[in-house]
Length: 107
Image (cartoon, rainbow, N blue to C red):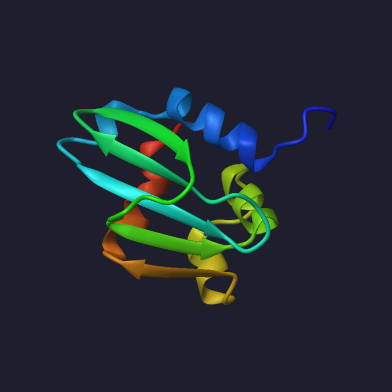
């Protein structure tokens, strides 16, 4: 695949894949804390999604994983629950938000 997915591309492209119909009044900040790449977060409010590199001062949930796990999940090669069960993904904060995450974005 010539268009290799990177964290920078994920941060740039995720808002465009956001599906506002599935957000229904959701207001949340998802922090992605990556062991081996730049951290980033997604802010979801008013049926909009914005992404930004760095750390949010008060996220609702923090997902802790490595870049390759994130890319496998984004590309649909692995689901978040299996990554969690294998210890490849940790969640801190409102873990119920993690279960909604995959529904918020189009493949």
